[in-house]
Length: 52
Ligand SMILES: [Zn+2]
Image (cartoon, rainbow, N blue to C red):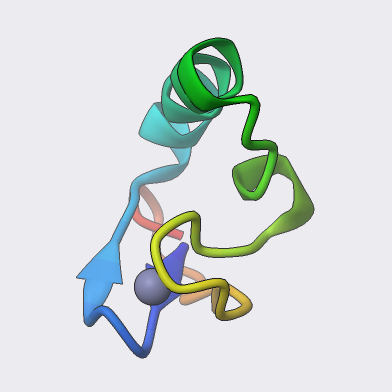
């Protein structure tokens, strides 16, 4: 997944882990809703093999 605003990508295998951490530490569930936890922009699927 990719945030066009932050110009930052998160690989799909990291998303689950990061989502858990954000939920645990901050009560933020943006990632599981497909939203960038930093800026609130909808994340874009890039369709790569490891980085989507
Ligand atoms: Zn962002």
